[in-house]
Image (tube, rainbow, N blue to C red; front, side):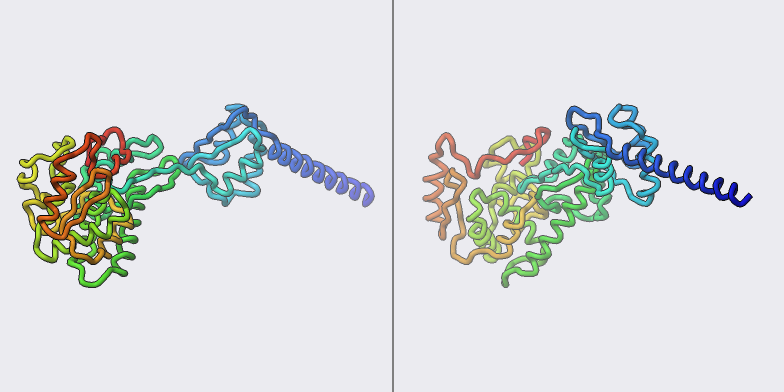
Length: 355
């Protein structure tokens, strides 16, 4: 009796061992199978997708086999693993184990969006809207409503976002990218303000940001930022009008068509620094760290005027008489290829007239 019981138990143990061995072999075979791909395959994982659902989808699409065993493997070994949404690049050389490793590590495809120094908020919004990879949530909102979504309903959006190249995964929302750019600008501005020069004519960092935006739009040659900042700071200190064309252009809005007339210089807008003393009410563009630094570290000197040579650089003058001579030489005798700044940087097609 005992002998029979022993052999029965032994049989059960052997059967269990064989069963476990079979399961282990099936799991191993399922993981080591090569993906059935001839070309790069982009697997999009959306919010709410599960590993089980993805394995079944890939089996239906004949990318892999034995989805049941892969689902079992995930449940036994990775049930607490979060599945990151985004896109995963699957290559013909990969196995199912390689793919599962991508999911474990969250190695999703990173896309980029570049916000350019000197762009205004219309151009920023156009760039966000132009990307099919970004989820659109603010298309129907006004600028003030966008700022309210960010939690800053009382702030004007112009100049509040930092120009940089931002990495993101497919499906990120436009408001999330704006939130990152806003936080980056706040951080850079605070850092630069903390190390500012003494005796500056700014009441707060925001005024420095406004000045930086003017410098950003006026500067064709990066090395001139500090000198241009010096001119504007000295003008403010002496109570002189800033008389800077980019502010006039910004105040003209969409009516600007590439040139400024004498009537435009006299037309009253809050941004016309030919008729209004001091700084304009808001920035006129996005600014990089270099422009902020220049606004907070203007070069010392005595120049009060500058005029564009036509190659992006400027002639600086100490007196009005010197300035008028430079104007006659460089402005009144313009070459056909004259420009006051370098060729414009690219912007989204839908906002090609923005300045």
